[in-house]
Length: 397
Image (cartoon, helix red, strand yellow):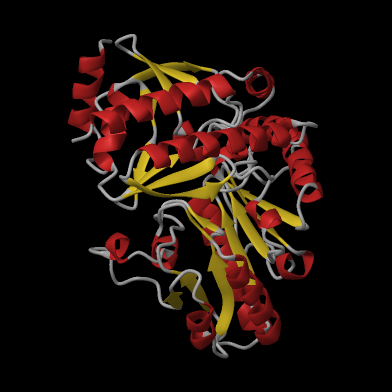
């Protein structure tokens, strides 16, 4: 089909919940995507931090082909070798002890909320089910995760919301202290608020969270849906901050494009889930587990994360050069290969102009241009992206 025909058909049949670009992607190779009109794009979006290993990666292709020759799905009434090995790998490369596999970040966060509430009720008392989240956070689109999200614009028109959530400003320790009471079960936070504008947690705030959690017997849930799987230069962002979560959620880059999420927890917390408390029809099926295990094995190869950090340093250096050149750039913030250019203008037009010139990026939080390149990028790809962004800023009036 021609690109125009594909777009027209989509406009006719899709629900109007996405503001899609008028582009139909046909395939990808490495760090590039191609559309139905034959155009080539450098991808610094990675499917919103999903395709960390880029496109058509041989390890992922091989894993999916292997799964296709066995059984793509068997249900969680049975064990499968790929899901068991994946669980083992994820535990051994984290500070957590038990794993539950889901299909998305929102589902992983739903599971975390349920686990924290059951733990609170059984450990602290019947009413100890409240969860404190951060303003500008983003935790998902289901009703509980939507409520957990600390942005009022996501709540509009979907009330009544799920009770039991409180919101405090990110990096405001005094506000967090004031919100804690006997009914608090958990503190739920992203260490880098990606959708909120690539806002990084202050170390002093994180230290305070740890202290308060110990003092009040409160769980720490860390949402690494976007920041996990090597995105920040470590396998998980918590490794940067001297904090160990009681519960961790991750998704996006876990299986390099195959839908999957994971909920991990410390043994003493995970054991509050009993048979029948939670479940998922598709979660951790052989297809997803094959792809995820292959992805995780690549991420843990010697030198892989060193490469991510090397590329991140080079990218930030080049972004700093842009900042010095253009006064419209107020700040650069992020870790590893999640970086945000904070602008004194709306980021939407920059996003559109970059796409028109063959570069995919993301506009978020109104005035932030978010860069989420594949973790396999090389310096020449960074140079290409910076050249396009430079050209876009140079054309602004």
